[in-house]
Length: 104
Image (cartoon, rainbow, N blue to C red; front, side, top):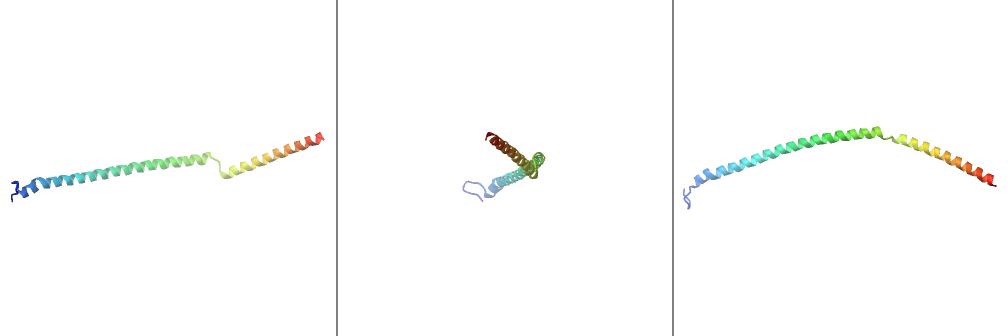
């Protein structure tokens, strides 16, 4: 079957269209495989990074637990300081009353 340009339609499909479509199919398949490989590598990198981040966070939490005081200990220190300051205040009040008594 000849067209107006003198080319056979069967030849055109066989010689041009099928190889072009096969090439496009191969490019699409190759790009998809490459993208899947890159996604797998990225996923692996993110998993490794997340594992390192969790390890560092756990180490920081352990450091905080070792370095900082507990709430119970902090309350105990606060109570001791408060009682000591009250005793100092009482002593100062006694000294002030003694001075006022001597001035009269």
